[in-house]
Image (cartoon, rainbow, N blue to C red):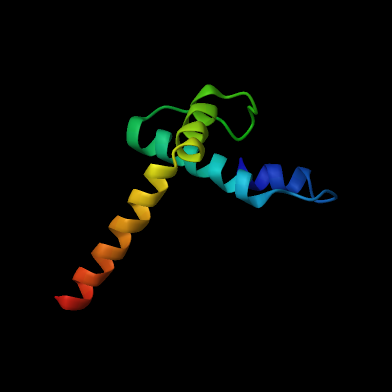
Length: 79
């Protein structure tokens, strides 16, 4: 699907950030849950919209991820 979307839009500018987020969401749902949500081809996909909303609206979640990753990297240097 990803390659088909790219091939169909060779004459246009592609927002790779959004395209790869949608690809990742499709992959995770398919691999982890066995569900094909196909958010790459459905701009109104509820799974994608809700997932994006959670990560974009939650500053504390982003801060916690950054904080945790820094602590983990420090621990790895110690060990």
